[in-house]
Each structure stands twice: as structure tokens, then as C-alpha cells.
Amino acid sequence: MHETLPLVLAWLAGTLLGVMFYGGLWLTIRWAHRPGAPVLWFPASFLLRMGLALAGIYFVGRDGGLALLGCLVGFVLARFWVAACIRPRHGTAPAGISRHASES
Image 1 (cartoon, rainbow, N blue to C red):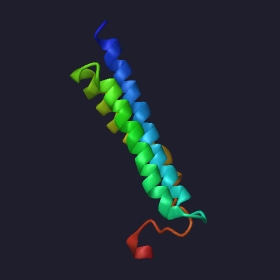
Image 2 (cartoon, rainbow, N blue to C red; image 1 turned 120 degrees about the vertical axis):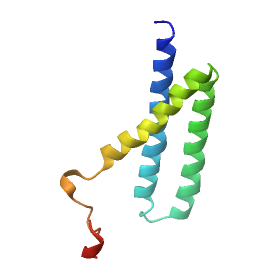
Image 3 (cartoon, rainbow, N blue to C red; image 1 turned 120 degrees about the horizontal axis):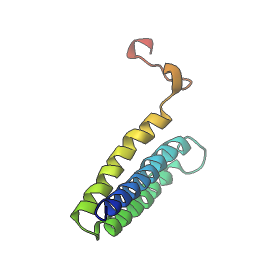
Image 4 (cartoon, rainbow, N blue to C red; image 1 turned 90 degrees about the vertical axis):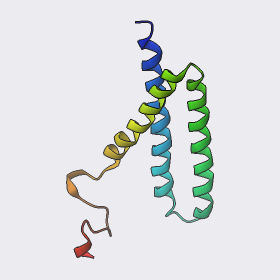
């Protein structure tokens, strides 16, 4: 029991870090179409997301290799969860984007 709680907490921390990282990437891509300076959005977002992710993984990884592994597993699984959450529903594509190359 005492060994599983830190592993579960590390996994949850990794999942939260992954959701912030991949969710931030999704928001950056959506905001890039707005007027202003989209060229600055990408590097600023990357530095912020990468800094938060690396700092969080480093902080969790100080507890040992098993905690680091749990954190990284949560981080990678969060990618699939975020992708599933942002996927268009019912096979519809956003306006102006065809679902198949033959429809272009």
C-alpha cells in the first residue's frame, strides 16, 4: 500500500502535465489564426509548455525511478486522452477542411 500511493500520485502528476502540454499545443494552434503576431505564439508557447513539463517531470522524478516512470506514462497517455477529447464528433471536419484527399 505504501508503495502504490506515490506511484499513483506520480501518474496523476504526469497526466496533469501532459494535459497542460498537449492542451496548450491545441490552444496555440487554434489561436495562431487570430490577427496579431502568430509568429510569436509558437515559440512562446513551446518554451512555456516545455518549461512547465520539464520542471514538473524533474520535480516528480526526484522521488526515484519508479515515480519518474509513472509520471512519463501518465504524460504519454494524456496525449491520447487530449486527442480523443478534441477530435471532431460524428466524423465531421471543421469548415473548409475535407476529410479525404479525393474531396479536395
